Figure 1 (spheres, rainbow, N blue to C red):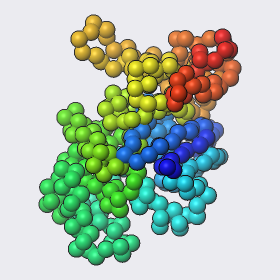
Figure 2 (tube, protein in one colour):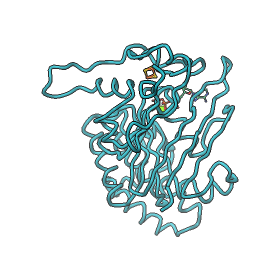
Figure 3 (spheres, rainbow, N blue to C red):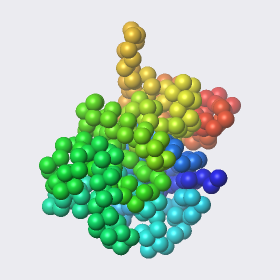
Figure 4 (cartoon, rainbow, N blue to C red):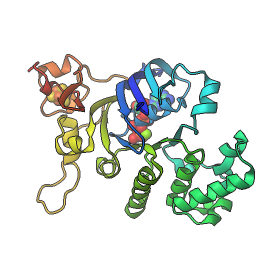
Length: 322
Ligand SMILES: Nc1ncnc2c1ncn2[C@@H]1O[C@H](COP(=O)(O)OP(=O)(O)OP(=O)(O)O)[C@@H](O)[C@H]1O
Ligand code: SF4
Ligand SMILES: [Mg+2]
């Protein structure tokens, strides 16, 4: 079976007056099959949204250097002409629920009109059938049918997020990237959204890239987890490997920062702040904050070591440089 999405050595910088911002640096990962969820977890500014926007070809114009490969279902997305990408890939094979999607609807148009727009524009179906399809999706994501005729400001944050998910599904893409779909929502609504994502995987065989800063939330939905730090994936593996046998000191600290029931241990926060990606630290980018750092860490970027089958970790502690 063809791998659904394969991202290889993706690297790009934003041009900035103070120098290039190294937002995505040599990132590689894949989604092996349908109905599969990968969680991309990391602190603010680590490059998660930049990665999502690059896969959707929605990056801002100030992208400077751009290298690497993105393959979707065996098709080379980077080499593909813009027209073809728009007609065959975007929304049809690959959709995005962008960060801050709750503000993503046009305030002067009814929600339903915006959901069916890609169907109508493509002329695939008539307006009545498009409307029926949207009503089905609204019901599926747990919204009443009258949402179709409502304006965005008439919906709560959680309702808008669900409506955005329905909009992403209108052309039945096999893969949807959801960028922080639960942020700015209260805890009970967050749980409803993560339950919806689990149903989408199970019932519609949908593959999901779930972007979040909350590793606990990602672990609830995802089969694989990728931990992103300062523009790089520092650890990736099955959710079980990453949660139960984390090898990267940053992953270990992210997990230690989660509050736990029935223990006396207090959550431990990671000291220091993420680096400025205009001037990232040399060698391992985590070294200024890492309690286990040793001399070599600042000198050379760690390659990906494989402590277990399928688990890749960029940390010199797994090599023989000590
Ligand atoms: N158009 C741009 N020009 C210059 N720098 C940018 C641009 N867009 C993003 N950046 C920078 O790139 C880095 C990565 O940003 P990105 O939005 O991808 O991070 P993120 O992980 O999604 O963060 P958050 O969790 O806050 O959403 C940040 O340092 C950000 O300031
Ligand atoms: S390479 Fe060194 S600094 Fe980086 S995470 Fe491993 S021990 Fe810490
Ligand atoms: Mg973001």
